[in-house]
Amino acid sequence: MNTVPQAERPARLAVGVVGAGRVGPALARALQQTGHRPVAVSGVSDASRRRAARMLPDVPVVPPAQVLEVADLVLLTVPDDALPSLVEGLAETGAVRPGQLLVHTSGRYGVSVLDPARRAGALPLALHPAMTFTGTEVDVQRLAGCSFGVTAPDELRLAAEALVIEMGGEPEWIAEANRPLYHAALALGANHLVTLVAQSMELLAKAGVEHPNRMLGPLLGAALDNALRSGDAALTGPVARGDAGTVAAHVSELRKHAPGTVAGYLAMARTTADRALAHGLLKPELAEDLLGVLADSADRSDRSGGANGSGPTGPTGPDGSAGGDR
Image 1 (cartoon, rainbow, N blue to C red):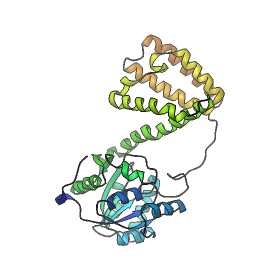
Image 2: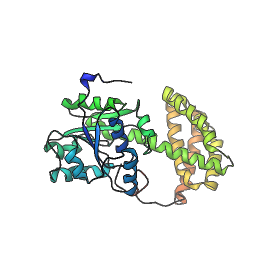
Image 3: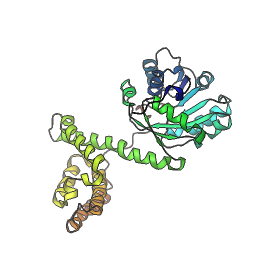
Image 4: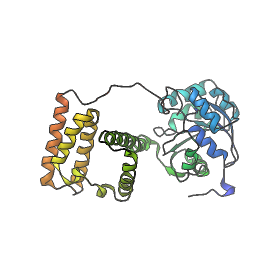
């Protein structure tokens, strides 16, 4: 892991957090461990306030504008959709101070979203930790070696990278124009992985497996390690082998026992087949039957009006609540 020489470390800063979701308190706690001083935090929901009290004890919970009054470094850790209006509001009300470091943790945005604050004299940084957060002390430990997507003006690049390294992370420079693609890549891999694993555990439980997590742990660990090492060459299973009959049996069973999983299974199987075929893992003579099964199954789903199995649940915050903290 990188370390920051003493002479290159940022001055000890008063740190404020706007949005006490899962991310902000963990980052503030990590900065505290390197000598920075959390001085204020804001939170919307009761869960956020409890989290702030647990992760940052004795740090006062105040409105966002008051956080900016006392902090040299402000972490804006709110959901992506809330960030632009938050920045505009803080700038319009005069809460932003010249020379203040304003850091957001959104993967989607670079520093342009901070332009209203930058015009007021703030120093803008985009530091996105490529990690999922639990809202507990374990997050601080997991920051060790965690990659951060870093975007900043050239004159602030060294400061941004130094802050990431102080938190235990590894800075990875992302160009402003590439932030949406960068974030889409992470969401595709991490967020969808959680959905797939949760569905797999539910199906194993229906099949009578007493401890689905124990069964999946070694299998998924090996699959992830192989994929990170070898990419598409790590593909195994009935789709990569072209076992059309097995895939058809899968779809039939899923329709009976978990119709809400059919659409996802078909989409991932088609994508897997395309990649396996392109990389020479799936033999062309077997691909035709397999793709035919997938197409027929997709047509059946369309004719039956889809295979949802459940309706929409409405928007929630990252901690499962309707709060506005990241």
